Length: 469
Image 1 (cartoon, rainbow, N blue to C red):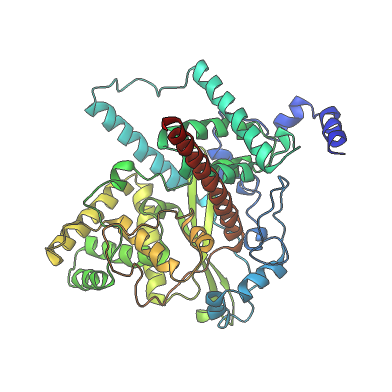
Image 2 (image 1 turned 90 degrees about the vertical axis):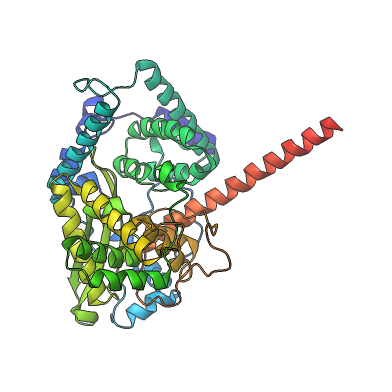
């Protein structure tokens, strides 16, 4: 039967090339930013109510390996998840119908000026780098040679073939669901070094652009939204503390409250917004809040925070959503101010400069308040502490949905015999159930392949020992 299905798939007529182009398939190398901003519903067709409605009859089942789209609206599944989530019930008790309203998603069309500002900022940094390294300032950006493009294409075909063999046997390459393929790659990413990942991502990029799917650009957005590859120098910086002590956080807030400077106010808002949402510093310009009336909710409205990530210059954008209905008005106001400040700075092309000023004030204040500390706090410490706080409330997949990536490094660097999470955590956001399901699938794939890799390494070691004997 499988053989007959494969034969019929190969023999079925394909669409004419002009029609495929008219439908937007295979537009490799074309800039997607203008199209995404002018018609975001077409650029991101998955941004529907289905994002907040997991598939299947019960929440927590293993994700399907089928390559067909399973993004269907299923309020029963959403209810099943909420009824098994104690934190959700705490908010649902104040909002009479936890499944009656769903967020519509961020307004991508409102981001044009902000993305333009971020692009100008990137171009200025590139110009400064060339000037520091005595490069030709007028030379165009280096493009991949034809041999390199062929290497990427070959690597992409190899990866797609490996995915089909292991996760979608019998499925034609053009019928692969690109988002599932991207999730599979992101699950494998921690097993590779950075150089390998860059090559594999370029190959996967080429393969995804050859798949005639309406979800290809969303898959590319996920490929470029993974934040586990933060700048290596920052990750390995021995001076940076990965978490923020609860007592130190309160002292920082108190000290900043005594200052009248605008910079102190910006840092104060950043501390509150960052520790309660886990948003990475560079992501703030593309964040937005969405509210919907609900007479039974606190303050009479439901509130969601949308965090957009991806390749902004090309328009390959995706987002994750956190429900913050249960947050206090003080915290919500800090988030609103943080978003406004970040957007204003980005619109002027000065976001990184303002972020640097705020980060320097945080380091300076920390050194003054905690002179015996050998390590330093920075704005990324807020995200790491948020992750540790959420681990005390959620499982791994739910934490991954909140921060946009699986958090596989659970080591207690710089901490000995100290609980990583805060003692009092009152304001907890709720993750998107659809994204939780995707993160469950990523974690499952990663766990299985890591175990397989360990078994192979054990076998090689045992064979080498027998050879020595």
